[in-house]
Image (tube, rainbow, N blue to C red; front, side, top):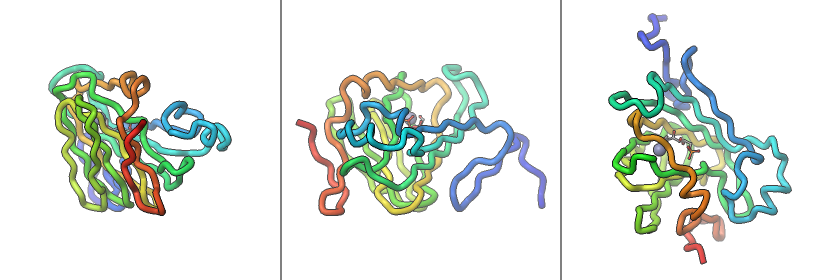
Length: 188
Ligand code: S6P
Ligand code: ZN
């Protein structure tokens, strides 16, 4: 086996998982996702420890410092809350000018994008699909398949995360399973 690269991290090319001592791990279970799904009663009835997604990230500089690049793999379990797929919280970057790339490793997903005029659309994600998140665009990912969805993200170290806007206003549309088909439904 060859030696590890200097940063001491390898990427599992099947799953996108990051392996190495400097990887930080975040776990989001049902109890962490208050107000994210449309049907809050269904979420509350779930096991609070039900795993929804994990993020493995490599942040080689303090968040907010300009000039560096961050990497992170997100792994979303398959499942639904009511008719809504397991998904990430979603955020704008605090610095709205900052962009991001997503590369899908495994599974079937949807990258849900909303611009500052609250126009929402989605891009289908499948192994190998590369996605660009433009400036001024909120982003969230849903697992619309029946197996683990994983994707690698790369973003600037001074992007920051604004979760508060989504917590307060949500996305203008939700991706729901309608007759088994992922469908964007405008919020009333
Ligand atoms: C960071 C990037 C991803 C997300 C991750 C979890 O800018 O977009 O690494 O942090 O997919 O989503 P969220 O909305 O909970 O941060
Ligand atoms: Zn982001």
